[in-house]
Image 1 (cartoon, rainbow, N blue to C red):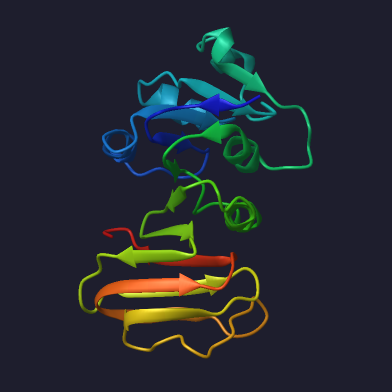
Image 2 (cartoon, one colour):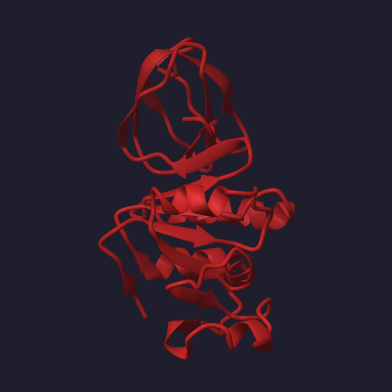
Length: 206
């Protein structure tokens, strides 16, 4: 099962969501999809998702009955998280994931793991203070001087940078080795990497 959309998608999880977040992100990504219990957050805010994907262990019959049956996409297998189930099945120009941070650490780590395992999916995970996404092979970021730019490797990777206070040339990043948290932009930032596996973490204002 694959859900294809021509416009960006807001993907809701069951984690903490700040007041006004759903409305704000829908202005950027107008198609609303929920991951399992994220449908409760959508319905509670007055929105009916275009699709709900998951094993439905967090979505009671009461809430399921509030959603048209053809929008419910049950995926019974337990080998993947609901976030991964969604990321695997959604095809869109961009997905902004909201409600996937700030609660269970194991679930949040699984989200970042999924991001780098699906590098062809353009997905931004939005938290209360930060956003994160898997780095493409090349990217330019319209950062301002003194903005924080953190690089966290989920695999061994090297890269090239312009516009960072501490350049990354010659550094070999690895999950159990060097990481690149709390670097600082000197202006627009250009990054390139020799392979997949790097997470870029920026302030939410970016």
